[in-house]
Image 1 (cartoon, rainbow over the protein chains, first blue to last red):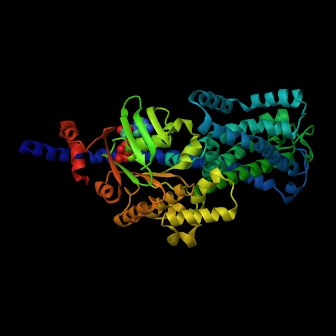
Image 2 (image 1 turned 90 degrees about the vertical axis):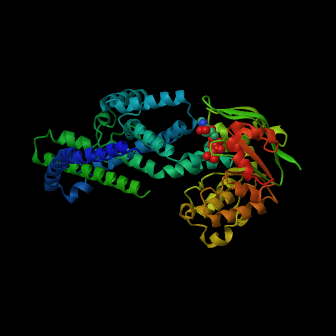
Image 3 (image 1 turned 30 degrees about the vertical axis):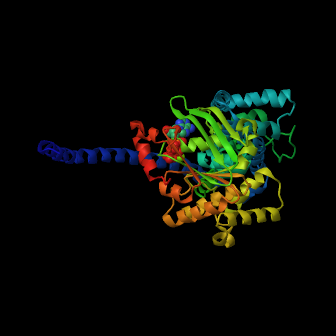
Length: 291
Length: 248
Ligand SMILES: Nc1ncnc2c1ncn2[C@@H]1O[C@H](COP(=O)(O)OP(=O)(O)OP(=O)(O)O)[C@@H](O)[C@H]1O
Ligand SMILES: [Mg+2]
């Protein structure tokens, strides 16, 4: 290096140093904004959950878990059972469609077919749940003559769950490293064998996370169920032609009732729902970390 | 000396780049056929045309012919072709499952075997790859917990488990220390008794130690380094340095 070049180089060190204060300051600003957002989110969450928890806990009783009710008297047992029956039915439908749809997307589809399927799935995510409910009512309840029922409600929930399961599973499949796929192909595997002996295995935790997310979202749905499952003052034991109770309906309906007890039921139902969803989300975090 | 694999005027391009140009070569049976060449010269691409792993990259266009036992690789069922021509990759890439399941993976693709039969295959393959004594009590161990050298020998065992005729090894020792490296070199010398070995390396000393034949690939072309005129051409200066180190 010539002397002048060396001198210029050393001067640039001085310039770098003079910038430290500015950089420390801008870092501080971003940090403060970050903390503020964090505090706001925590505060909001505490407010909502705290309100539900306080009022819910005040009215909740053991009896509510074991007796059936009709939104103004009795308990929540039928609504709790119905919620999980509906979500379970939806999952039985959505899980295979989502998991295999994702396999198709990641292993078999071409740029065009894959693009079209992804677009449809994304559109599905953005359909308002009331519209899905209307579809369920017209097609499943009326046209296919299922009546207000577990099957109609479950399938409608399932339609809503598919995109979550499909897209998250697809991401999990594509996270399987290229080298590993090549290793399987180099041993003589075909795409189907690759999918079943490697991808599904590797994507287990991803699929679990997707399922838990889809389930917790589905459990909180109301609109689509009002058109397809209606409500039932008792347990539901048949797949078709028998309405189903669910917690979100109790929340929505009981809150409009004039009695103290109905209000207590609504808040208890809300608490049970929020607590279960929390539990599922925590579980999914745990599953994710266990990978 | 029998020819197992042969290429005639093999060309590979990726649209923007000519990766291999007019490569014609023969791979001899029951021998270690070594391909040397600097990084980026197309060695991996070349051997990947043998088992049609290049099919996985639609952008790569393969022209010319690759023959396996005189028949175009296109005319084989690709699953059969890949079973018969095994590949050990440049970087060890065991599956994230137990040592046992890694080795059993291949056989399970091709046959429905009883547990006892798989047990035997796994043991045999690990023995061939010189890993059995180290691993015999530990077959349930996750393959990712093995050392790099052990992982590479596991990958060799995995490739051997489907009983290939040809074993291609793409710089199998490039990520290993000298001890692990010499273990794998010893192994290659043993394996050539029963298999046709194709070895890719840019380690000339290794090529000199183990090879029966050495071919030099340079910028996607086979260099006939035995003919001195070629090497006097200025564009082969770098290749010449390679050749100088090759034992004749
Ligand atoms: N799938 C692909 N698509 C596009 N280009 C590729 C592809 N595979 C290889 N190439 C290109 O072909 C050339 C040769 O690559 P290749 O991996 O065969 O070299 P190599 O001799 O094995 O090198 P190294 O010793 O570093 O492994 C490189 O320039 C690379 O960028
Ligand atoms: Mg290479």
